[in-house]
Image (cartoon, rainbow, N blue to C red; front, side, top):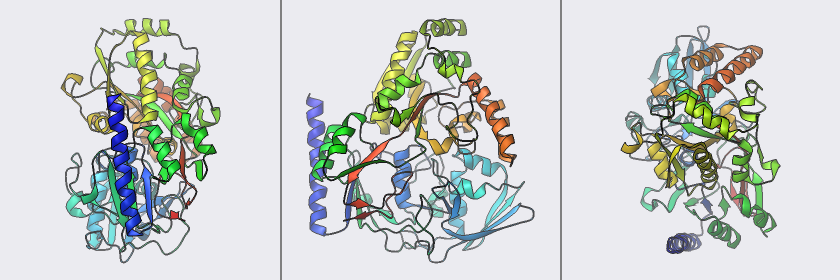
Length: 527
């Protein structure tokens, strides 16, 4: 009780001071409660969506996907393709400036893309076909490729983490594994470092020097990014009841991820709207650490996969309303051309704990401790972790269930050491459905070992199939590769798919202009 009382007191203090500041300033102010605390600021060093969402306020991108997931020019005025697809010339729009007053130059973009290309799955594919990226002038970026790569704008404008955000060369030239020291971008909002309170608040103000695209209609990451708000405050409210009460009282204007149990109350609430922004949903997963026992053994990963019920996990996350979740989800997003029924009996067949325990024993499980990271301040992932932890116990795994905050979990994900030295064995997470449309942006199906995303799965077969997909332009051939990849994924088990859910968001009725896809703050108005 003491811990909860202190939490509520801290939340009340967090809300009261910003409300007074906003009332005194008379600014167009929006208060937003994000999915979790913004513990990590650098969007290249983490795949956490809370960091990616923050970065879209501060940074801009060369291209941006629209709501049809087509790449549109954003910072670039346009591009030309020559030499049978081997030379791309991109020209930056005029007047682009960073928040420190410096102009955006082509060399900033080159350094930023190179840093991104060391961390992101799609970025690694881009770098693998790139001979050279240069900046022959301040506004011109030139690519020389080893072979044609028509997906280049798609890679540079994609939605999911990691995103190819453009930052000053002095920051982008730093080690991609280490967080940058400043948040200086050229996006429509500035990050106010002096007002940040870790664990409590982040503040952004309108950047008057931002130059939106002059044409088009706002659509996801494409079109003009018009900032109609003067100030955006992110307030960390880990207690759902506190967040719901704050939204009802008008102390916050937008709650990113209300919990399922509170949705009926919010939907009946006066002056509150509830809707799903992302039609592709969120795809949940149990990610294994492939570097250390016991999950370095694919047979043990397969035994665990056979014991997990997607419907149990999704019910814990999203409740009994089947319109908000689905099971029977494989290694690619339902509805995409890569999705298939290949090998799906491993997920949809009867869950047999006794058979899975026998499979674990036959695979050689020796009672090694299994450290599962469980973030208690992230409701959806906490719910997944509780169900998976229960399955681990029933299987007879020697579970070390480590409760922590989401920021600590994000930092620990990058630790390759053994669990006793700060590492881990598994964690639950989710990604946007759009990230699993194909293997280009699908970080978690990579089999590239230490260059794969956290968990570091290795599968030469999956990598070979992915490379074939990247070089294919025929949808039927890509569908066939999708079946192959799913068949292989059920053997290698880079992660265990846990289902798909559709996360509603809730906001005050005087907030308008929210774009589909993810929490974005341009085009949003108050009043």
